Image 1 (cartoon, rainbow, N blue to C red):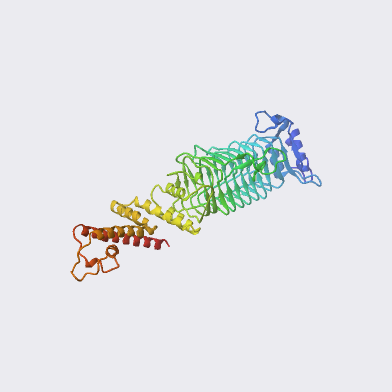
Image 2: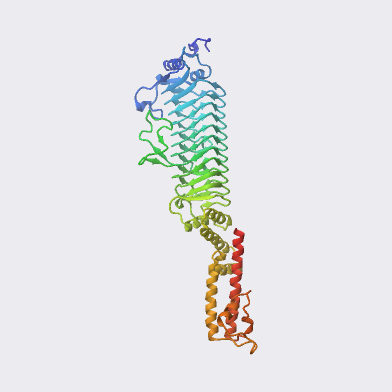
Length: 533
């Protein structure tokens, strides 16, 4: 390198005019602009070839970053390049880069190699890059890759981003292992914004930690032939995970746009929206989300063997408000949320929803979601009978004061359980349901008792039985006699005083048997209600 205080480039570098301009701009902290003024030819993603007047060698760029010349007096050195074609491989692996770095509208001939390097802030904006290899990268400030097109994946495994990671409107294609972004174990101190991103391959965030929010608003994740489009088990997000729609600003690529580069978080009325779309499976198992997981307007396109898996996630609020998946499964087994915000049109049908062990406290439906549809929701989640989803729904309804709804849910549970019983137990279940609805409608017992009492009274008024002992029987009263036969415990001193015969004997036996059946079913229902409390 040069002598201290000497800002000239080594003679053996033989700088081109573009490189000399970049060298001087670095010392001044200004931008080296190599645009030619034609938008079509300046587009780094276009088909036009870029000539030697725009080419800078990766070797020279690395020299400036790692061991650059001192700044001009009164200036702060920074690498700011626009419209350059960087040839060969830019490799600063393991290096410490102190200057601010921003490369905008650039083309890279080969991959960018940054493993175990340290930056203050690194911004690659609207660049065409074959691949970004940045495992264990460390930045004190931001890492920005908005509007870039990366042809063979981004690797950020175990990277540490000091403030924000931005991937807005970035297009990332898969690498040889089928992954578009490999960021397992990554830590982002503040926000990870990947809004309106296009990912073709698996986006992997296993064990990643996000200090504030993770936003995939309006993004399109596509991995139809792999198992998952998003693979993020054990993901920790301190605030909210947004898998929602994004509002499109009128001029998303305008120079006046500020991060997130033309995306509207709170779109005004009439703003065009782009929903979040995931083609392929999604795995968020064992995730921890401090505020919410938001699926509003999300669309999931899955094959029959793919899953939207939310096993054992924990979050105060789950907003399941997207479009109903036509295939695949939604799995909530073991998940724990406080508020479940949902709508009936978002949940899949029979066999498409699993939620054994899913715990929630409060249901907050959006739109029309009556109890009948809620029971269909539970039935769809239990192709084979399981009591927990019914009991959880009943508990939630009871917590909000809907005791009648809770009883309907528990009655539905008993009817569903009856389908699994042997024939004798099933017949007894039908009898309990028909008479007192398994104890959840005890008023039915009084109705049946009144009907049988009336029938018995009419019958024995027309066919009174003879006394058991002449001269010792009490005065004949068909009302009390029928009631004494129906009540299996209370003795009204009528049933034993008379001796029915023939048809009257059969009528008395039927009333006695019916009384015992009603008493038994009422007792079983009361016991069940006490256990429920």
